Length: 394
Image (cartoon, one colour):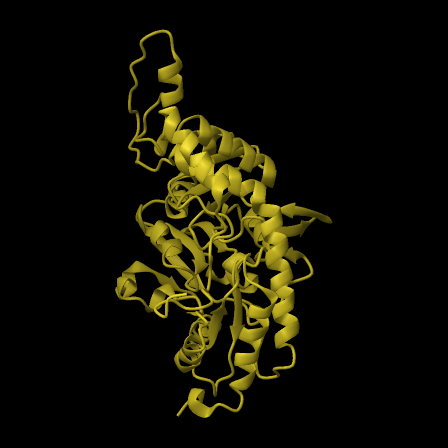
């Protein structure tokens, strides 16, 4: 392997000849964008998660935008969410003039603290946007109960959560069923399954699904498949403002193959996560992630918390010097320059756990092709840091 590349990457998509052949088939078919492959991918994804409606789009950011627009978010409307997430979560709220309201994450993980949601509600609150961070399901049972009781729609940012499950009324169900009003997924290369890029919305609400399909294609009221398959001339119209948020058939063909792999990929990642937890268990100063009894994570990422005396950047550099690629803890949107204007957001309470997690956590390598020996090697390097004062804070 080239010396310019890390020996163990933090993530790696699982793709082979089957995905390549699927793409080849679509290219030779002559229909390469939002056609029969997209329709098939939507149907199969909906069946997999147990959702009656699934709509494919260009990425998860566009999915979040359409979800927020569907529940009516407009100028000045507030959406309760977390700052501790990739910036796209909050950005999507702002696209139509909404205001993100940031609450803290819990002390024992990286997801929104349900105890803080009701205190953040005002007459301007129009939605709750919860995040299944790193593939670990958030406490949907409590969040959905709050939303229903207060008549506030719940949107799930399930970007990382394809294949994750929650225990719902005593039954294990896939994230995306959906349990809130709308769930939004990502197929970026760092996710468990990928289409290169791409997204999906799932919902029980047929009217929401109709809107997604209208808006994703410029607001055009006739689908391409209908127009091209008609034996009569059809003139389309554009009754509403829409967007170019379509998925290509080449992406969908890859997604269909990836979806078939998903149970095996999740099983492998769950095995590797357990191996990490076992291998790191004797490092008393390192906090490993905990899976609640009501959650089954796909382990899109394995994120550990460092002690205060271990510097995050220095730790990551030591690991990189050993050929191990890592990433810092999840960002906090309110600390970015794009949110420097106080009018861009509102903070409810303190974000202590969110900031601590960003500054004191690192994401370790985890991907389906990773070997047991590689996991143990990462654990050994971390274990050695207890006596390696190069990583100690000044």
